[in-house]
Structure formats: structure tokens, C-alpha cells
Image (cartoon, rainbow, N blue to C red; front, side, top):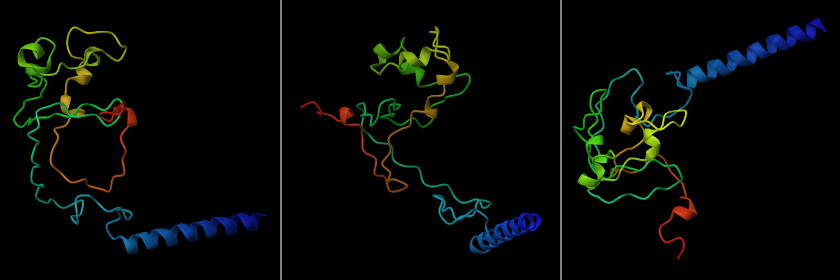
Length: 159
């Protein structure tokens, strides 16, 4: 019995060492065979930033593809300040300003805290808009995508 335990332990160690050796020789960077969307640059290297994508000129509300999807931003937001002291988005989208500016009001959920209590101002966890909302850009998908939108959200799905 004691010999079986020792043999099993040695065998397991040998397999682990062999797989580690194979991984190190197949992938000297030690990334584990994962191909980066960054291209051929190693993680330790600094490479030039990709060029900025062109923001769509569409000004109408973009359709959602699934329930609970944060709406996309249909305009550019370059040079918009969103910091602890200012939020340019709220100058148009807050409940006080939306009617005057003609912008879509932010959801009432943005005025709720984690306990679902309604606050008088935007909840701190919803204050930094670009955590969830992103501008629509003209960009090809980074990876193959077979996503199919929810049938009930398709335009004219009830026709």
C-alpha cells in the first residue's frame, strides 16, 4: 500500500513536470497559449495605441439587443469631463435638464442606492456613466460573434 502511494505521488509529479516543461517550451512568454487581441506585442512591451474609432453620426436612440442592456451613446463624448467634481452627461440627461435639452432622461434606477431607496440625486454607483454606456463606433468585431438578439426586442417583431 505504501509503495502504491509513493508510486502515485511520483507519477503525478512527473506528469506535472512534463506538462510544465511542454508549456514553457511551446510558449516561452508563459501566457498559456492565449492569443491576445493586442496583436503580437508581449505583455511587457509598450506599443502604440490603436487609432481612435469614428463615432457614429447617428443622433437617434440605438436599439438594445437584450433586456437590461445599457443604452449606447449615439454621439461623441470626447472631452466630456466625468470626475468626482463634474459629470458633463448630467448637464443634458439629468431629470432637471432633459426636457430643456431634448435628451433622454436617465433611468430612475440611477437614483436608487443598493437598498433600492430613492435618492434625491444620482447614486454614486451610477455616476460614472461610461462604466456601462459606450459610444457607438464604426468598428469591426474583435472576435467572431454569433450573437442573436432577443426576438421580442427586434423592431417590428409584432407585425
